[in-house]
Picture (cartoon, rainbow, N blue to C red):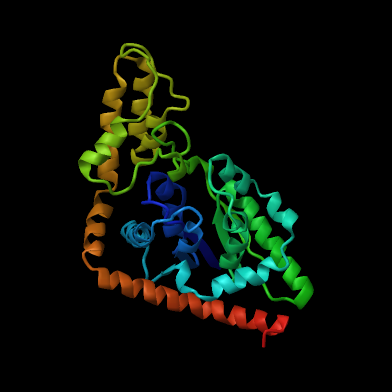
Length: 320
């Protein structure tokens, strides 16, 4: 089973990235042939600062490794290092119906958030299809909000296969557990685009400031606190033991403690949960040459999958 997933370097990885994607991806490296890429080409639709893009791409890779990705088991690489991907995206675009892309809700959602209506943003699903199809991927872990993009990928692959023969394997979705969704500091889903993130490896004072800044209601200290939709509880359940979580939930319902007390306990739990990873991260960041070697080896392994697929396609469509 070949597994493919990617993460955009539009900012530093946060708790939502870890519990929503990275943690599951690291577990999957034990169950199949895993390929994970830093989606720097995708990030160009929103990131205009070249220094930030370069830095964030490396930081994402470092964080992934610190969290447990094993480069001996999983292939970690930069999307842009596989130079046939843009060519493949162009070929796929020549058979992709406009209506198929116009129905993609992600494009409409991004416009509603104020992003510039660029061709790149509109054709994002075609580049995503190139990422998936280039490696003969069997399984693609996706959230429910990304399932449509995988359906687009399958539709495009079917069109190519109908025109030119069995070129592409049709990948299957692996729907991520939605219970892993993490609320941000404002209670909405944690997302870089919402500006409500808690990054994984902040300095202690910065992390404490973020967590103490979580928005809460005006319930008095002595009164019971609502547990439904609580950002504090929503994060705490991922970093605390079941018994610790149950105890905090009961204290919410009992009243007598303020939100500040709960936030302090949440900060301590987050800090402790990521302590081993933080130590590992310091070691990785201290050796940039080794990171370069890991990414280079990853790109070479990924290319070994992608270029035969491209040769097969080029031969079939007449680009001999």
